[in-house]
Amino acid sequence: MAFVLTGGRVWNGLAEASAAADVAVADGLIVERAPADAREIDVRGCTVLPGLIEGHAHLCFNAEPEWRAVYDADTPARMLLRMAAHARAMLRAGITTVRDLGAPTALAVELRDAARAGLVESPDLLVAGAPLTTTGGHCWFLGGEADGELAVRVTVRERVRAGVDWIKVMASGGNMTPGSNPMRAQYTVEEVAAAVEEAHRLGVRVAAHCHGVEGIRVAVAAGADTLEHCSFQTPDGSAKDDAVIAEIAAKGLIVSPTVSVGLARQAGTDRWQSRAALLRALFAAGCRVVMSTDCGIPNVPHGALAAGMRALADAGGCSPVEVLRLATSTSADLLGLPDRGRIAAGRRADLLVVEGDPTVDLGALERVRVVIANGRVVHRSG
Ligand SMILES: [Zn+2]
Image (cartoon, rainbow, N blue to C red; front, side, top):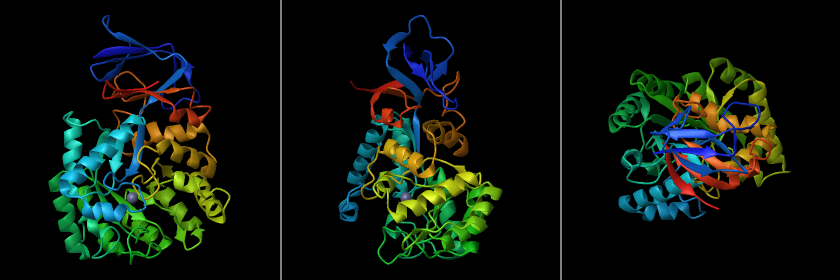
């Protein structure tokens, strides 16, 4: 399939602004010049940008307050269908790559492979399967309980054997599991370090869930590759620790701050203020940051990445272009996806066409007109 998007503006994933240009696609890739038989797609009034990357999703949760009852009632077959439906919703919102950081292992791997085989309409998926957690710990019901260094090593080996792309470890407790305390660490440094060592030996990186500073310290000391949430959570909001933030920056660890429409709903509160101060401190310290929302958790719908991007711009004090980079080129680079995240010849043709210009108004991301994934037009509207 070859086509050329004509008459619109282009933002290439890096530049300070968009510019008038056409984009040509052939055989799944962005190309310099369209073949003679290329179909024209008129995108006047629109901007073409790289497909968005969601750094932290849960396709198996339904984003509703009663998520747990639905999760518990699902058969594996129904859950797989539910995950596929959420994946399609994300794709239609212009999200062409998703890192799923917590689902039953076999289902996540199956859906990723089915998507790559063209059996389901889905973003390209990177999956962690069931996160490693302590017995009865955060999200134990996903099937990843492992206590002690040996069990942690064995479980990492099992995940890699099953074909995961990332290892997820619950370094602290979490907010969605009764009896779990997000302010406390779940694992010791030695346990998380065992997971990191084993995963790296096998060529896979580690995403560490950490909310309170205690869990963040464990994840940082263990050298986890991405710090999920990294919210410095306290009972009242966030309490940033500048020494820990400096260490995150010095070690080059990647922060995946899971900023969503949930934060936007807190705008004007002390909670929002403390989280905004944290995000600004992370940027000011030079921390490497990817865009993520934790979609699937209650009241954070799949596909609401654009709302999360607006929330991050507001709370983090970022310009639209800075946030757009986080969700495209920066996430591609930091998550190890050098084939995407930019509009440049030879890159994978994952493209989003929106009405208006998101480099001046992130609200344009809500006006999706065309989604192109791996060189195929997968969605058109309006
Ligand atoms: Zn999560």
